[in-house]
Length: 361
Image (tube, rainbow, N blue to C red):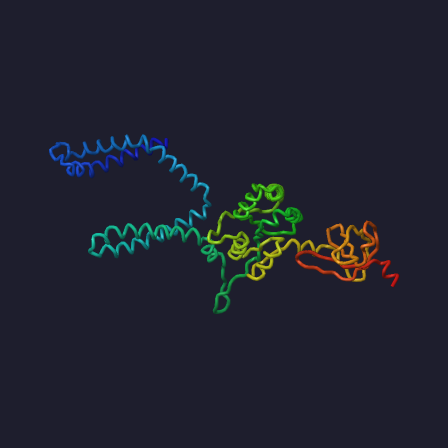
C-alpha cells in the first residue's frame, strides 16, 4: 500500500513539474516549433510518465526512508515529540517574522533565498531547543505556589518521591531485597542511559564484567515484575553530558529526586551539589548490631593482618575485625574485647584484642 502511495506521489509531482518545466526546457533546447509545447495536458502527461519511470528505481529507497522515519517516531518518547514539535512551531513563527522583514528588502537574493534559509535554520534550532530543554521546561510547571500574605511562596512538595537508581546499586543486587521489604517508598526510576551502560557491561568480552552486567539486568527484571513497587523508565538523555554519574546528578536536580547508590565517590558528588542521595552501604551499616568498646565477642581468626602480629576475623555480616596480637590464633576461635570501632560510608571496621591477653595483663 505504501509503495502505491509513493508511486502516486511521483506521478503527481511529475505532472506538476511537467506543466511548468517541460515548456521551458523545450524552449531552451530550441524546440519552439513543437505544437504540444503550450499544451498543459500533454506536458503534464509527459512529466508524469518520466517520473513514473524514475519511480521504478527510487520507490524502494523512498519506502525504506518512510518506514525508518515511522519507526523512529513510534519509538521516540511522547514528551520528546511533543516538546520538539512545540519548539519547531516556535522556531517557524520566529522565522516567519524575520522572513516578512527580509521580503521588504529589494534585493533579489535576500528576499528570495534568505527567507528559506532562515526558515530552515530557526525550524531546526527550535526543534533542538524544545527537545533538549524539555526537562527544564517541565520543571517550571511542576512547582505549585500558594499565596501567603503579600508574597507568593512555594508549596513544599513531598520530598524525594523519585528514587533514581545508578548502575552500581543495580549490579550490587541488595536493592531488590530493600524494595521487597518496603523500606524504599515512592517511585523507582531507571534511566535509559543506565540501562544502556548495563547492556554495554553485559556485552563485554571480559567474563567478570559480563556476569556483573547480566546480574544487574536480572535484578531489574525482578524489581519490575515480581515486586509490588512502581517502576518507571526515564527515556530522556542529556547529550551534552558524557558521564553517567553526571547525568544522574542532573536528572535528580531536575526532578527533585534522590539518587540511590553504593558508590562512595558519587555519594560525595551528590552531597557537594546539594542532591539527595541514599547510600545502601549507610543503610547496611545502620542495621548492623551496635558494638561498643569493651564488649566481648567470639570470633575465628582466619588470616594475618597488614601490621605485625595482627589477625583478621569477620562477623557473619562481613564486618572486618582486626585483632591486635591475633596472629598466633589463626584458625582458632577466641574471645576478644572490642577496643574501638571505625565506621564510614565505605563500611565498618572493628579493632579488638584477645581476652586472654587482657587477663594476662
